[in-house]
Amino acid sequence: MVLEHYISDLLYRYNCVVVPGFGAFLTQKNSAQLNVVTNTFSAPNKSIVFNRQLISNDGLLVSYVSNAEKVSFETALVEIENQVKSWQEVLVKETSLHLNNIGSLTRNQEDKILFQPANETNYLTSSFGLSNFNSIPVTREVLKVEVEEIEEKIPFVISPERRETSRFRPYLKYAAILMLAFSTGITGYRAYQQKNTNEQVARQDAEEFVNKQIQEATFFDLSPLELPTVTVDAITTSAAKPVISKGEVTHFIVAGAFRVRGNADRKIEQLKASGFNAGYYGTNAYGLHMVTFDSYTNANDALKALRQIKRKQSKDAWLLTEK
Image (cartoon, rainbow, N blue to C red; front, side):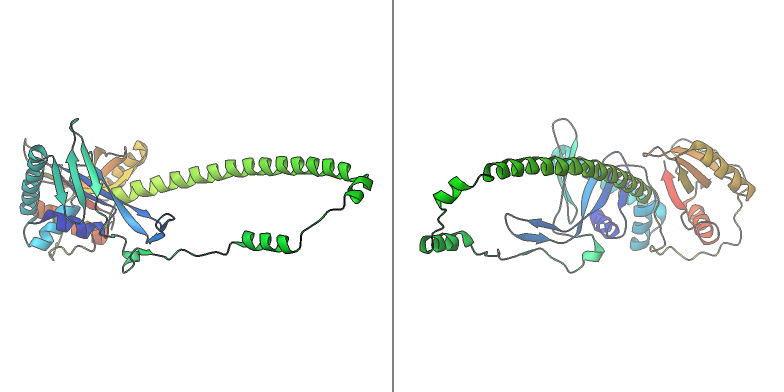
């Protein structure tokens, strides 16, 4: 199984792909750029970064591999874990790991992993078919030479007598200097005000962008991934959460994540009133409080329940698996 092939497929549709036990690959949209030195135009693209801290299984990659390989969820999870062990051994022995169409991972002397993204693949679907190209520099006419030639043929002469008889010319010079200083001060004051306004707008845009990135990395839709068709007559949600033994795999159906713990508690009460065995999972890497519909020890039961909940309750529900 070539795991990086499936990761590359998911990066076209999602901004965050987590490899359980290894790390997460995240993408960020970049606008078109112009290199003034080489006159090269670059199309809009997605840049890839690697986060070693995000290792919890969110179910996206495992479900996609399970559907593509035609195997069960647990079998796909075992294959991914084996691939991760192989990657870690390569980083320890060779200190460098190359993933096709994604990038290269390198371990330094401080035991930190450095990531160098690949540039040959553009994961921004709106830029499909666009490529980088070089433009011929625009040749502009140099008018200074022509002006010098005209001055040589028709020289400009100022009459000394007229300059001596002009009494108001010195005063006009001083008035022009004062006017220039006054206009420069006004222009500088306006530029200062505009700078403060631009900084405030940029700060607001940055806060909105960070909130959007966190939401995109926390919630995603599994609807494009075809899961096996299963008919579920009823889901028993009133039973208590099963006791998890050591080493047992648990599958949680996540209902949402909240910044305020009080909102998470109110969501749990609403789900319990609807008949679900809702509970509080804890906080994720972004400090958001996670609420679950229910938990299962059997992967097939969890997938059945997830499909039923996404169809009748919430399309934003997703599966979280932990061992």
